Image 1 (cartoon, rainbow, N blue to C red):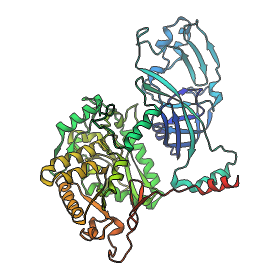
Image 2: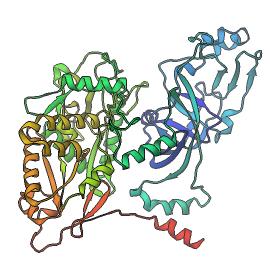
Image 3: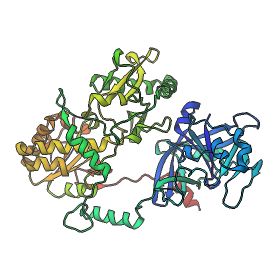
Image 4: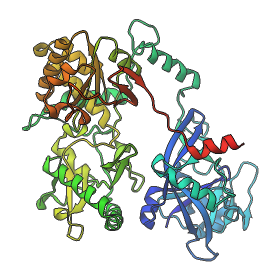
Length: 572
């Protein structure tokens, strides 16, 4: 059971991820290009077919939904729902007060667009005066239209919220790793349109918006590396209240644990956090995952291997029996699922879904994103080939190298099978480290990496500290120095500095074989470990979305075109 929003400005149906989980429906993942008033973005959504919707009392026949898109939440609140009390406030609407069933525990899980015209056919209408709300009865029940949801706001009092519409989905396409199914889909449905336009209502705070012109200016600043320069008016770094809170939490709580790793709490937006018990939701997700893995032996093996690694590395641990019943509101369960990189089909990553919504709450909605501490991507790439000797490296398991303090770990609980046996009992675990998927993790990781650099500056020198601070983009390091000895010393000192915080720099690559020969094989990039450096050609390395040809010392990009679409354009 769910509440639904009727939106005649939307051309499609949207549902929440949590509703699909309750229905045990998976759907096909598609990439959707969305155009809003602040720009264009590409979102990953699930597309489902074959849904049916029906009124609670089953007075009308079910309404078929050709297809629907799933997203994290529907931009509406319970303040927008008609209630018996609202109806009783108006004399002409009192007759329907007893016909409205309001259940606040039920979430808003669907938005119905005008591609379901039968849903918008009013069966009965009760009009009011010019400035009064009116009521309409649809197949799904009564609704009240008008300013009835603003009863908590004094007349003429300004509000900080407003609804924004006309969010347009310009194009829908399958993800790259499913591109092989596109042609078959088009053949099976020759009349299906490939370009889909939908309109979606959203809610946002009334504050300064970023215009396309401002975005262009920011890109220009990024290219010329002037961003946050204190010498140029208008480019000074100004922290928001939330960013200041994040930095305060980090600076006061950061410490090294008994293993020598940095340990910081989850940076919550509020001091007091109370979340609903979503264990049942996660149980449903786990059972659905079990069915999937049971039908795919290879995926099952990859998943189990990944889980065993996080247990072996102490990145997760079982919840002790005497702590299973945590304080009310202080426990949150994370669903998890597997993803495969299109370029690395044999390498699985298990993602803990910090955006999973339950009762209009999710872990990410309560976490601070933190300030943008990333270096300029263009700046890192430009400095990378400034000097003769170039090198690249990677921080191993960067997010999992930073631990969460024990008081926050119950917000990172998850369900899994004892001894990795899918036929065994389901038990509770909790993550001990910051997660890939948590909105706060990139800022936490950057803060801890910068803290490591500053703490080691006096011992290892400015060059090493600046390398960690200025020449890393998330976990990828790229830099260049004038000579081979300088490169070898930089590598040795950087590894020593990082090891002081239990961070491992590895996957080194360089355009000089003398540098690679000075490194242990285990510290080299994967495809450089077993090479005969005196005779073999150095392979191309991927870094920050570019392809670095070490032999010619050039940077390039690989563009993969959809052959079906290219052929079709030539035929035209």
